[in-house]
Length: 59
Image (tube, rainbow, N blue to C red; front, side, top):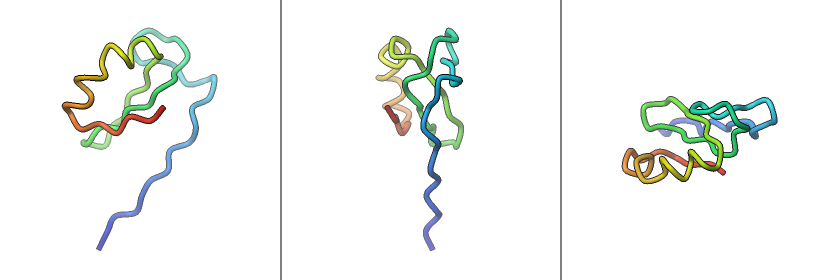
């Protein structure tokens, strides 16, 4: 049995970066089920670590 795919809503102007509060441009869905939102700057800064953690990065 496969688990259903969860669809995440598109990011809106109300979505804010978890690091600095700027407008979020990237959602990182963690393999543990959590998610983080990042502005472009912080997404680039944390991209390597997120990939190491097998995060699903949605732009």
